[in-house]
Length: 286
Ligand SMILES: Nc1ncnc2c1ncn2[C@@H]1O[C@H](COP(=O)(O)OP(=O)(O)OP(=O)(O)O)[C@@H](O)[C@H]1O
Ligand SMILES: [Mg+2]
Image 1: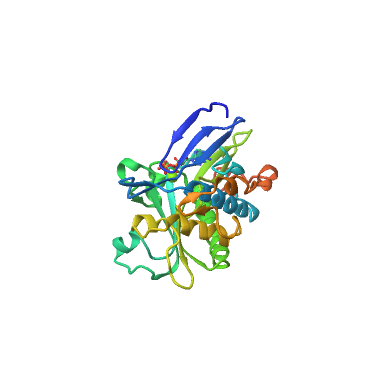
Image 2: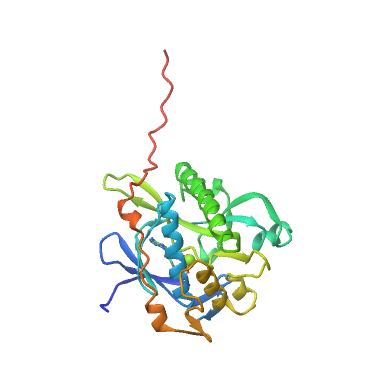
């Protein structure tokens, strides 16, 4: 493989320059981190499963009209995406109380929230990704009100779609984290699209019958069986053969390599919807 320019190495992924201008390659590592990288490990096969699960979910979301950065999977660990200007906010949507909200508000884990709840966190590892409000976002110019409106409406739509999708395979979608980016068109028009990844690394998923955790909490809480749980999610989604691609803690490279591509065909043909709004006009006297 030719030498590529690395643009960024994060905790779970490496970003390389893509083959065409405006594209990037996302490489999914097997590294797992939690509590702002204070806890670390490598879990064989996690990257392969997340690559596949995220590619599938992004493609499905594109199908309901959510613009995403995902273009196609390249191999078991890499996907081609559109380069976007990441908005430095993590959007968390919660359906059931778990994780930090339990501590912050004294809620019991597993409590159904009266309605889906959207929260924002400022993406800054040094500060530990602090929780912020819409007013912080607008005041500090991380996004303007039109961008925020688009982000929130997309987040609710994504939540509705994912709730149904996971319910169909016997999983409860407890909460999840999204990242969005800006893409500028040829005429300077602005589009907001879903970026990063959607996988059991950033969704909480519980088995609908047993409430067993099938996500990164298995790592955070030392429950073990992380890759088996992710594999179970991929298997239920029909993305890997029954029996899985990870056997006895090792990845079956041959099976993983033969999984086939996922391509987001709609992304190429999609007519993007610009969120540029005309400036508000003063009412004219008649
Ligand atoms: N389409 C995209 N264009 C540009 N950057 C992207 C795109 N999709 C994701 N990214 C960024 O690439 C990085 C992915 O790496 P990873 O998820 O491992 O980072 P991380 O360690 O979680 O750090 P961060 O706090 O920045 O998310 C993130 O910084 C993410 O915001
Ligand atoms: Mg990340």
